[in-house]
View 1 (cartoon, rainbow, N blue to C red):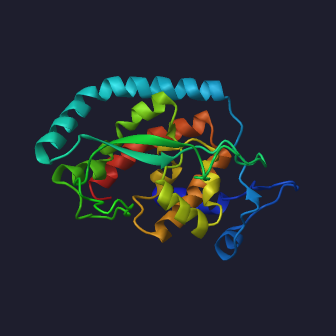
View 2: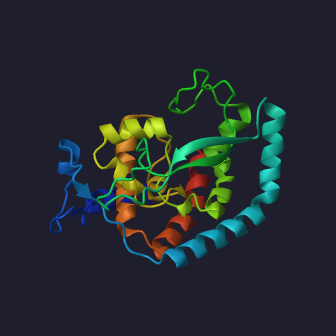
Length: 258
C-alpha cells in the first residue's frame, strides 16, 4: 500500500498548480527540486465549508466520546510515570486564509504563515525537553521521551486531545500536520512551496502521514510536502473519509514495526 501510494503521489503532484495572474500551468518535480517556485499558487479543490465543518465536528465529537475511557487511562499513565502536566499545549501555525488573495494584513506585525493556535497533546517528553526554550526537532528514539511517551508516539495516541482542536475549529481531522512557528519559518525559507500547504486547515492525520512515518530531518519534510500539496489540490469529503479509513491500519502496522 505504502509504495503504491507513494508512487501515485509522486507522479500526480502539481498537476494543476496555478500561477498567480497567469494561465494554468504545470509544475514538475524537476522544477520543485531544482529551483524556487514561490510565484506558484497551489489552488485548493473547492468544497462546501459547511458540509466539511459538520462532518469534522460530528466525527470528532463521536470519536471523543468513544475514546474517553482510553484517554482517561492514558492520562493516568502519564501522571504516574513522569513529573509534569498531563496535557501539553503548544503553539502551532494554522490555516492561512490570506493565501492567494494578493493582500497583506496590516494588523499583523509578523507574518507567521497562518493563524496561530494552541494544539493539545498528551505529554510524551520530559518537562525539560527544551530547557533553553528553543524548538528542537523530535527524533526517532528521542532520548527526551518518557517511558509511556515512546508508546504513545509510536501508536499516535498522544494526538487524541486534538479532537478538541477539531471541535474548536482550529484543525480538521484530515489535513497537513501543523508546525511550530519557529520551525515553520525555517522550512518556509528552505523548501519551495512549503507555505502553500497552509491553504487548508491542518489535520490530526493526513495524506502525508499515511504515506510516510515521523519526520526527523529536512529531507523527510521535503518528501512529505509532496503529499501535503497533492492533498491541497485534490482534497474532498470522499478523499478525507478514505484517509481516515486508512489511518488506523497504518497506525497498527507501524506500532508493530512496519
